Length: 374
Image (cartoon, rainbow, N blue to C red):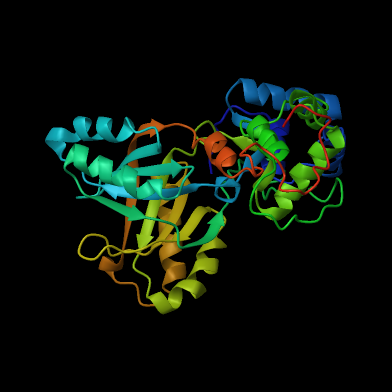
């Protein structure tokens, strides 16, 4: 493991400790700093706040705050593969990227399917329309690979130093909450999602600052973020590292032709490997794409990445006989497009409206804001 990322011991402790489980209380840096001191990392709340600010400013973090689970907010997203011929590569990629619904696009090492992109839409019916348009414009077939089962989405990246297992979980601190049971959002919840999607303010009172920005009560903001965490609308609250800045430059997508009857057994086992950040079941495409299981790994060198892929293969082989043709690793060779997945549009499309089409709460009293949001 490398230690060459330019962070001192206390910064390493922060990065490792708080990639999730940050407290949702009025002044969260106080209990967070106390938890570090219990682990022999000498920081008070002001020092912790200052260091998180600095890590954010220098690009070690992509942001600080709540990681929104767009799937639970509304709309749909899907992974798509296609072939871009070498002599038309730029032309095909430009046509794909011109679609605003295309959020991420990567070139990956594969003899045929070398372009991999994500389509994110507010209306799930739009996916097929977007793919039909891309096929008409490029003359190339697209292969839709929607998620059928999710076994793990937890992109955590640790560095050498204190708290190497990242086991500080303070998510129990904060208000007691009960899941709402609703799939849709209220207008106030939508406003909250849009305000926090790019991170929380890195201040001593981040939740109060969010409340002021959307004209809501601070207690409601804390309650709603904590409830979103319980409901799965928020995956976790904490520091979100820039994995490239931490040296995780090798990105390998391993794909497997797992026997259908073994998927439910294999999935949790592969997901339990700490270096697997994403793990899904997706459909095959006869004659073109034989793989139904995806596991994403990240490494800080080619050797480390290869070692981790081999560990996935070894774990797979405990459940079925893995042949040489039963799997592959697709490394990304370049980022072709990387934009947001338009959570604002997806959240707005999933926000309740009244009979007149205005934003409302379908008769359910809105328990929170002081005004303005509706």
